[in-house]
Every structure is written in C-alpha cells, then in structure tokens.
Image: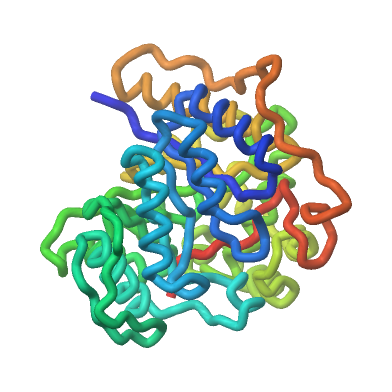
Length: 382
C-alpha cells in the first residue's frame, strides 16, 4: 500500500532565481505536487512561474491554485495550461475556482457555480480539439478551436469550500482543492457534499486535495502567530466552517466587522480576537508533532492528499518540516517504521525565500503582498 501524496503551494512573491532554487529543493524533499497561486496583482504571473518550475523539475505535478474564469478568458486559460502541460511532459493540472476578493480590484465579482461549470466545459472541449461555439454569462466562443495539440485528459481540479461548489466539483472535476481547515468534522462535511454531486452525476468521488495553510516550528508561539491570518479568513468567507469548529458567533461577528477579507496583513487586529484552539483547528500552528496529529486526523477522515501553503518568517523551514511529517505518514501506510516527526535541518546551500524588502512584498504596505502571508487566492465557494 502506498501512502498519501503531498505537495506545496506557493505564491510568486519570490524573485525568479529564488523560486527556481525552491522548486529544486521541494522536488528533492520528495513532494509530488507544486501549486502556484494566480493572485492577480498580489504576486508574479502564475503561468510564467509554472513554466520555470516545469523546466527546473522532472517529477513534480504542476498546477494553478487557483485560477478563475474571469481575469482570463477560458480559451486563454486553456491555451496557457496546455502549454505548461507540453513544457512539463504531461505534468500539468488546471486548478480553477469561482474567484475571490482579489477580483474586486479588477472590477469583477466571483462567478456563479454555473458560470464555473460553463468555463470548465469550454476548456475541456478546446483541449479535445473540438470547434466550440458557446454563449455563457461571462464569455463567448464563436467556432473557436485550439490551433495546437493539447492533452484531452489534462486534469481539472476545482477549488471549493462552500456546499454548492463542493457538489459541482463532485459532479465534474478530476479533483477538489479543499480549503476547509484541518479538523475531521470539516472533512466529513465536505466529503458528504462532494459525494452528493458525484452520485447525481453517476460517477465516483474525485480526488480530494486538502490545503494546509500555516507554519510548523519548534517555536510554537511563532507558528501560532503565523496561522492566525488564515484563520481570520474563515469567519468572513466560510462561516459555516466556523460553526463546525465551535467558534462562538459573537467572535465570528467581531472578526467580520474588522476584517473584510482583503489582504492578509489587514487581518492582524481581527486575528487577535480568535481563540488559540480555533486557530489550531484551521491552520498548521505548532511544532512537528502537532502537525503530524492534524494530518493524521484529516487523512483518517478521508482526504486523499495534503498540500502545505507555508506562512511565517521561514516558509522553507515549514516545507522541510511538512516533508518529514508526510514521509512518516507514507511509512505508516506502507507498514514501514515511521520516523519521528522532526523538522529536517536546513541543508547548506538550500533554498531560502527572499527577505521582505521595502518594495512590493513589504509587510504593512497597503496593496502589497507580504511574502510571509498569502493574499486571498481565487477559490470556489458560492
């Protein structure tokens, strides 16, 4: 029996040379997937960085985490994903969602689940070589055809945290990217909705890929602080998960009143209102032993893979620690003795994310991305 697959999700906040070094280390640590966020103005271009990853790796599956049908026409997305797939010898995944608050700065609202389904259908038809004519609420194609060869079976993963998009994903996606926290009750709830959509479509449940935001550090206070910003995202954008996690409604309301779900550096005040216990349910926010306990819980509840989105002052330290946690999970699944969950030491010459600078990426600058915290990425949740 093989163990669960696992991956890393990064924003393009590091300079290209630093990102390439990170890709090399991530592959050497045994990760199966590398995801790059498509965060409009918050980070560098996702497809350029996926191309860099494609030519500087040989094994990693490479995906957007996630794009949306609005900032690019679905036909442009089809061509971009097919190009990355060709460049990587068939290792690409298209991660797509309905969109999130970064769209507001561009004058867009997140699309509906039906609009998302229309876009996925058009993209798949173009990959199959079909001539496509469609008029959908957000886009039009008139006898359009992709003029170069593409892989018809290129996987599509739909990002979801709300019931309608979870059911949509269950009915049509090859995989579902879950941003639902790190506690078993949330996994059970999400899988019920995915299964409902799968049953309605007469198909098996698609792959479920849980994203684990946060930090792993022997400095538990630092790890807890790093996890707070993503925990503050849930009361605004996924309040149903806060109820499942036992967050008092009065606290959820207070967080929503002080944080509208914009850039994560704006969440500091709201995040301080959250109980430590809630933060630990929603994010990686402790040492390796605590991370291993969280990962065992969500794997036991039924997710197929877990992917770390590192936050905090030393993101690659979290990536290394997560690799140790997941190698232990793989060893247990195969019946081999599991190594102790300890963060591996940094190797001489290993990749280090670039330090924050007083240009784009400096914490506390309005409209700038903090390399240690993610901007909200495009997700599906309506």
